[in-house]
Image (cartoon, rainbow, N blue to C red; front, side, top):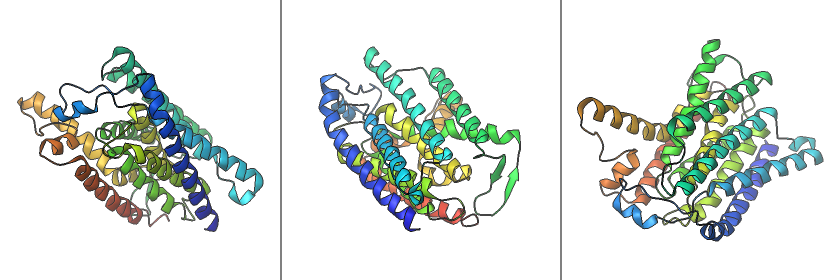
Length: 336
């Protein structure tokens, strides 16, 4: 237990400090490169004032993760007790970085087109699906993934064979896109993912599904999100862009597979699911009835249209995520 706590504290400090520092220097650099956010005309009119705010801040998060992994490798060479970069951690981090690369390409295309639409939805999903397949193959080949699906709130697991890979692919791509949709107002995605990072840090102390690598994940995710929030909280001086949101989405859902309970992501990632569901319901309702359920989707924009401040939306969503992280812990008690 002392080892996990030490890893969490050290990685949190490294990722927080490095992400905040890198973001600080990244802001003027992105401004000089004219990497400013474009705002859709159909969005809330008051968002127009945010146009030109530097984006692609997710680069700072990716660098922070690399620094924490490097520190973990060095620590592992010095002390066997601090060895923390396992094959499952390497695969999760690699999966997140590949999604971050997709986001980086998407952000770059937006800059070249000078609009808020980069890769097409089919192009982006195809790339994400390839990443998901590679992740699943990697986890299977290294013995970190079986075909047994754990049922939250119980100690039961069912071997569903090939269907496990199908469910895994849907969860991997779905959650990554859900976090991407959540990144619509200042500090929303980073605040909620920070709490998920804390959840993983707590799970790290479990003797069955935790360990040094889960501690590395939890401390790093919580730290990088906290460091980025220094400049991303309202009023944001920088946005993470798809570079950051897809990268964080990869860590969120990858972490669920790391603790061998992928369905749990539906619980601790409930806010991200709500954001996605609001978009799906909005589209279906308009196509079937010609009417919209929400004033605007994703749902955080609906609340904005109802007069909620960005800080209130972030606060309420964070409370929901914190509660669901606690529920997720209870759901895993059978495997802890």
